[in-house]
Each structure stands twice: as C-alpha cells, then as structure tokens.
Amino acid sequence: MTMRTDMPPERRLSMLESGAWNDMIITDYLDQAIASAADKTALVAYRVSDGQRHALSYGELDRVVTRMAAGLAALGVEKGNVVSCQLPNCWQMSALHLACVRIGAVLNPLMPIFRERELRFMLGHAESRVLVIPQRFRGFDYAAMIDGLRGELPALRHVLVIDSGDDASDFARVLLEQPWEERLDTRTLFAERRPAGDDVVQLLYTSGTTGEPKGVLHTSNTLFSNVRPYAERLRLGAGDIVFMASPMAHQTGFLYGLMMPIYLQGSAVLQDSWDPHFAARVAEAERPTFTMASTPFLADLVEVAPQHRDALASLKVFVAAGAPIPGALVEKAGHSVGARIVSAWGMTENGAVTMTCLDDPAERSIQTDGRALPFMEVAVQDDQGNLLPTGQEGHLMVRGASLFVGYLKRPELYGVDRDGWFATGDLARMDEQGYIRITGRTKDVVIRGGENIPVVEIENLLYKHPAISAVALVGCPDPRLGERLCAYVTLHDPEAGLSLEEVTGFLLEQRLTRNYLPEYLEVLPALPRTPSGKIQKFKLREQAQAIRLEPAKRS
Image 1 (cartoon, rainbow, N blue to C red):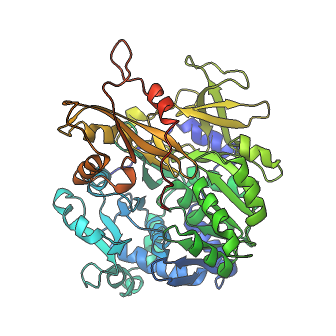
Image 2 (cartoon, one colour; image 1 turned 180 degrees about the vertical axis):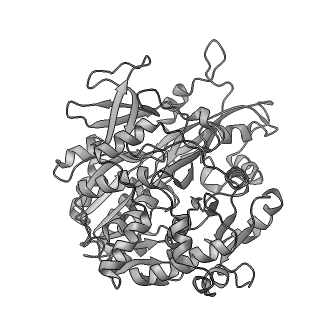
Image 3 (tube, rainbow, N blue to C red; image 1 turned 90 degrees about the vertical axis):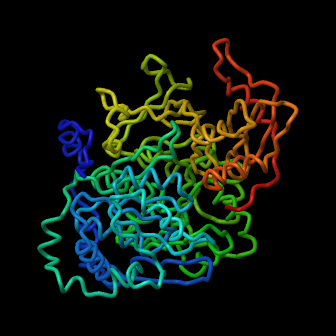
C-alpha cells in the first residue's frame, strides 16, 4: 500500500529553512546513542501483574532490533507496509518501532482496550501485514479475539503473540530465537530500506468522534519537530530518566516515552498498566526525573505519596494534560511529590502543541494550558475565520512543524486551509502573553481520564436497542477523571423502564470496549430539541453538571 500524504512542497522547504525539520530518523539517534553510550541503560520495563523487570542497554537494544528487523523482512514485510501492535507499555513495543523504521515499515500502535469492533475496522483499513499482541493482558485473551477476526482480514499474514508458547506464532520464537541477521545482509537491507524524513513511520487512529476512526499519518520530521522543542522547554538531557505509564499506543506515551529517551540518549522506565502504589515503588527503585500523564494520574500519585515517603523525590517535572489541573492538586503535589507541575495541551495530529514553562508561576499551570512550542502557532478565530481579540472564546487553530501529513485513505478530511491552519475542534481563549485556555469542544466527544470516548459510535449502537427511541450522550464532571459518560434516553414504551445494567449489557453484546460504557442513565419523557428537531446537548450538559456519581474506580 502506498502511503499518500497531503503535504505541499512549500511546507517542506519552509520547515527545513526554519530548522524545524532535519530529516533525521529515530534509528539515527539510536546509532548515536550506541556510539557514545552502548552500555548505558536504554529502557527498563515493568509488568504490574507479577512485578517482572526487564532491562536493556543501548547495545542490547540494538542487537534485538537488528534481529527483529531482519526477521520482519524475512516474513515478507516490505517498505511502506503496516505492522500493527496491540500492546501495553513493554520493551517489545519500543524495539518493534525501531525495527520497523530499520526496514521502512510503518508502525500502527493500537490501544489495548480495543475489541473486535474497533480492530475489525482499523486492521482492515490499514491493511496490516503483521499484528503483535500479548497472549493475555489484564485477564483478557487477545489471541482468542484475533482468531475470531482473522477470516475478515485478508491482508493480515502473521499474528505474533507474546508468551503464546506456540512455535508458529510465539513472538520470541519467531523473531528473536533465530539468527535472522546472519541469514540476511542487514547492512545492505537497512541502507536500501531507510525511510526519508518525510516518509510515514507512524499510523495512529483517533477515537472516531464522527463515527469512524481516522488514521493519522506522521513522519520522522513531524514527530521529531515536536520531541526536540518539547525536551528543550523542559530542559531535559542525557542524564534524565523518563517514567512512562501513559499508554505508548497514545501519542503521549509514544512521543515522550518511546522516542524522546532515545533522542536524549537518556533512559526510559515503562509500566504496563496503571497502579499508583506500584508506580511509587518503581520510582523509588529507578529514580525517574520526568513523566507525563493525564491529570488523574497526578491525582493518584498525590493520594498515595504519603504512604511512600520520599519515593517520588527524584521527579523534577510532571507534565499533566487531558484535563484542567485543579489548584488544590498543584498545591498538594508541591508538598507530596515535589515535581514541577507543567500544564500542556495537544492531540494525536500534533503531539503537545502548548505547554507552560518551568519558570512560570504555578498559577499558569492552573489557569492555562500553556503557550505554543517553538515551530508551532496557535490562533483563536471566530466562525468566519477572523482572529479574535485576547480573552474572547473562539475556535482553536494550529499550524506548524509537528502538524500531521494526512489521514490514511481520507484526503477529503484533511482540514488544513491554504495558510496551513488546522481546525482542532476545540474552543479556547488566549491571553496577552499567548497562553491559551481550552474552554470547550466543538466536537461531540467526552474525555474520560484523557481517553476520547467516541460518542457518535456509541449513540448509533444504542439506537439499535429495541427499547430506545432516542439517545444523547454527554459528559458529567468527575474530580478525578475529568468527565464520565452519561446517557439520556427516551423509550418507545415509556412505561416499560430501562436500567443502566441493561444498557451496558447490550453494549457489551455489541463488542464495545468496557472503557466506553456509560456510567449514568436517565430516562426522560423527551429530549430537549431545537425547532428543527436537533437535540440540544448543551441543555443536557447543563443538567449533567449536577450529577454526582460514586468515586470512579482506578483505571
């Protein structure tokens, strides 16, 4: 499959002239790290379920990546082919991306929460040649799920399963226990397959806020033009140890947990699922200096910190994104964690776009989402595309070096205007110093714990329920997760009644992931509508502000 991008030649020229792009790829930075610090720890991966720790030096990582890349080529992976993985944070995922870049393949990380409905579309749309999965993770059998989908995915040639124990499908037995590098001329192979700076190396799917997920395409130039200024603003260097418990199948984990440590020649510490007590113990053992996660992660660490005295003392910087940071949380974090709390805003299509600075007063992180990183611009416009004065709410627009280069097979959706501005779908206001504050969303989406919930898709599923006449999903506020999903419905038979358990059971039968299930249901005699019949969700959102649910479970 040819990866078409939507990038005019003048964009490349301007990015090179500005210094935003340098055509370096991640294996170039890996080679530099090997040359200068082959024995240094590149990454440490922890598995929460059994406490397993796996560490690799840069030299060891390179040997694993070389064998893995040669093995993928031997399996028939060609330059430009998509290799998908549905993995938690683990050393295999980091190595897999590096191996894909060695042979010019495109890595497509998929969130572990996805189930049949999402995977059927994403793997088919991407025409994935290889899929790497765990046998089991958090009690779920991924191999059994994929076995049920294989017949619907004709392009999928190989499914490699970590810890399967089967000779034909086990990830280690197929890729790592055979000397592939001795059977192929890897020097020539890697030289011939080396991707250019503008070749696509990453495919990430959005959460489908308009009903169907979109495949975001990124190149080495767009990704590293974000990583470099991000690291510079935070004053990170080779001496830093990055702790990453945010999923590497999200842009946050991928950019700053997988790519950035290699760029810095630093070290990465990965945790495969979120458990704040476990995270504190890992921090005590590994002494990380930086992490980034959604605001609920910070709240959890602050809550458990008193039980782990001084365990988090090494953390210098905690970048929080995905939801506003309450002032009380920043104050508590200052006492219990000690890290500088930095606020940021970004999206799959750009990575982090705005971020506060280390020298900013703490109020900046509470009251704003930061100002644009170098090589990026933000603007607030009205409905006609005119710039708005400072302090006025409008549509948040973004342009610059880390802007993605297209949606896979959907060029008509690449909403970048002739001046390079991309409509984010968010509402914001900007102050006189260029700091923005996200104030709302024009997109119909709920964000729970930093995870976008595809509202339209779930509403379409609920319309299939035999009892439901109309449905509208909105978010209700939650102090830890930011929002939780609430369902307002009307029934064909108002006397029949409908329970939340019946609704969630129906959605599970439709193979919807549990993370997307509504947590509140209210049956109404009628939904508020405009004279033309459109549901007035703003009224339901106002109503949802009064909902107070039981404290959300840790997720």
